[in-house]
Image (cartoon, rainbow, N blue to C red):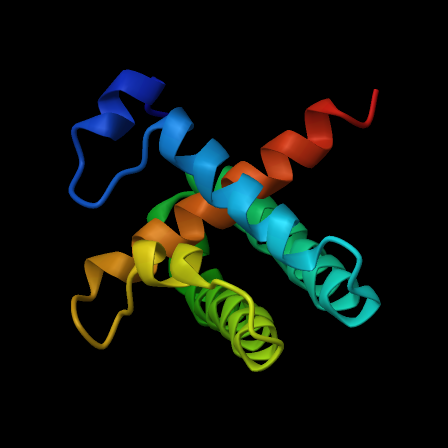
Length: 134
């Protein structure tokens, strides 16, 4: 197992600082404020992010063979996370809300590394919900 730190993460391309993640999260929460449908889409995003974060957290504990066995499921779950972010942003945009947070996360069509950035942010959302669930 490799022991990692947040500072190490920050050296990687397309990483997000805690401050950037907090800002994106605040933007989303402002966007869904008072909107029941927006809140429902956000909750679906969180549920999917929880599954994804569990897979990702366990990844460093797996050997190469187990990673190969589980890679398809991890990718499918990651795809679902991205779809949930897109659904939330699309809905909020239709409601006339500012969805600049989605643009700040980036689009994998522009650069494959944005996919990792989106996954990182999903894990941050799970982290925030986890530590607030004491």
